[in-house]
Image (cartoon, rainbow, N blue to C red; front, side, top):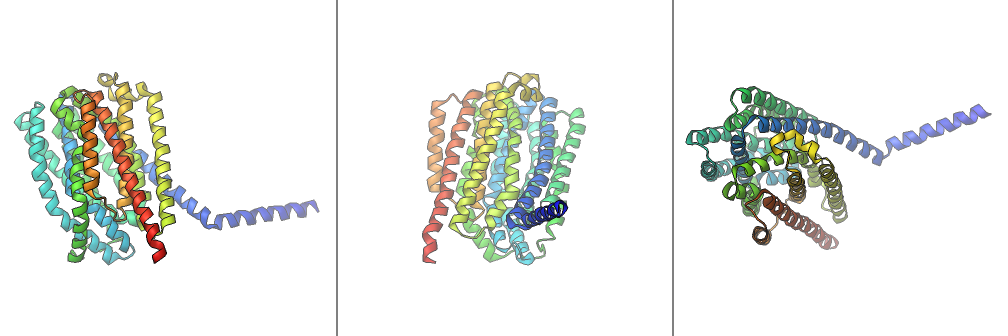
Length: 447
């Protein structure tokens, strides 16, 4: 009797377990755990390799060379942002509509690449003279300026292509090939940096070493996207017109944020010392670990948000969930830095060991900036673009007030400036996303 009861109880438990495993919520949770596990593990590896690359550059270059390296990398980010000018946003938005159709998705990607060529040239024409002046102002010789710019141009083009080539796999949520490619590119970069900087510890060598693995990585990305997109399609005038509409709305903001996004570097390069410029660059290497969160959301969350149906309740729920999750994660990062500043700064070397308070401020500013970027990518993935006539004047007023109230000739002053700017940008982007979602609620009953 007892055996029969135990047998029946075991059978009941197995049935409950079977029902639980077949439940949609359980299946969805399992899928997310697998995705986050694969992506998270790979990204931790990528960020660890990236940190090793950054530390290697910091330790191998002199303070003066590292200051030039920081300037060049900052201008690289600015030029990439200008050249993109909302094109990846437009491609993601259009691709999200046809992501299941190989030919149409290929047409979207081909059109995006074709559309981007003029912006890339324009960005170089604007960026190179400015970078040349800033390098000269920070004691770079004419030969060094030429070498740095020569190394920067191939990196610039490879980064532009990388952004667009990742869109198709992200929309398809085929994450593993992307992660493998990213890991291989970063391992190649680490190997080349270690090999080259030992013999030639110069800024331009560090910059050039980053481009060769990325070129090979982009070839591999092109092969990956062929499974989802037909590259034999021709650029579409209709799609180009739609993308132009997005770019026109995004471009003023892209120009503004390409400047304000790295305002601390620009200010220190003009008003500060070479040492302060090197220090903020070194602190930025530690803060780059925070980009892990941005990359994870960019691969797993934002493409899924772009694919959601236009339903008020669902969009609001997901939008709030993203905000809460990012907030908790960044509080954890800031707490770690507050508790272990000495141990973290040890990585950078003895010349940066006294920057405990500066590190804390730098991480807070980076968290705010990345948080703002995630929110912006979230709503813009649905083709929502904020009117720059609203956002830019508010941001300019904020920056002007912050510059007036802080000493921007010191490292601590510009770090506080970064925190103030990041806070305002987060509030603006977060509020705009909520506004667009609330507008859907007013439209729904009339449909």
